[in-house]
Amino acid sequence: MMTNLFDIPPPHQSHSPTSTASAEAIKPKFGKNMVKALQAIIALDGATDEEGCNKSGMTGNSYRPARVKLEELGLVWKTNATRKTASGRNAAIYMPTMLGKMELPHD
Image (tube, rainbow, N blue to C red; front, side, top):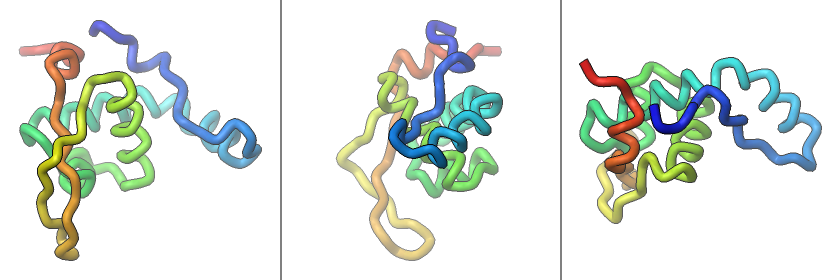
């Protein structure tokens, strides 16, 4: 891995005690969540958040913060393309960057 995804703190609102406490509580899982989200996006060759949740088996509240942090790190990017969600709404498709693809070990 180029980046140590396991040392990255979860996003939170530092002015909010509850947000800070939640971030601390999920910190041990956050790196694993980022890896699972990145694996899902790569496996699907691009994914909406709903598709990423389904592929990774994560809930939206776990998947989205991981995907947001992956985007901030330049490991995935938001395309201009959309796909319909199960409820029929348009959702952005996120694609892995070349760096994102390099982050995961290959067989």
